[in-house]
Image (cartoon, rainbow, N blue to C red):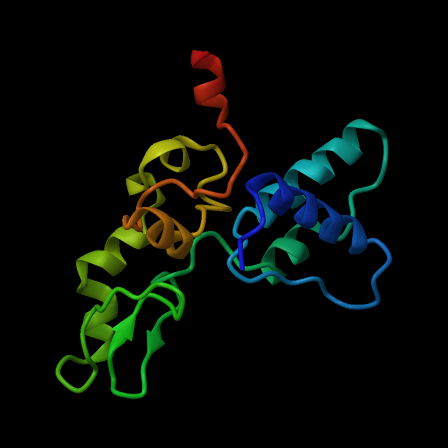
Amino acid sequence: MKPISPERHDEVLRWAFRLKERAPFIISTTEAQFYRRIVFQENQRRKAEGKEPIGRHCDDLAREPRETNDGNGFIFISHTGDVYPSGFLPIDCGNVKETPLPEIYRNHPVLKSLRDPDLTKGKCGVCEFRYICGGSRARAYAVTGDYKASEPYCTYIPKSLRDEI
């Protein structure tokens, strides 16, 4: 199956945001870190049009997956004890049978780099939304082989890069 385009990702996430206004349930996403950017942008647009924001900003962002959480408040441990930043990011960071989990979590270079959005490369590294979004490190890794590369399915161009054009 072919993945949807970056533009379609945006369309679907904007649709999910609008659905929040009338849905009797919580809208949640998986591996769609840029949904947080979309929530912010759409509510800013609504405010500019004199409309009430959808949801409560602090509650909505607390419910949504936060910026890149692979190895950042989240960790995956396999049935054999192998530690990965997430179930979607297959980079082996050690084994709990050999090294205590707190030591792996605090000290492994991959996990430490994932917790610093300023180390992300490309447009994600300079994006004004890198602290609430950060892009999918798993998707970056799957598409480019580099977990610190830019989110390949994000259509947003950071302000600093637009100013250069």
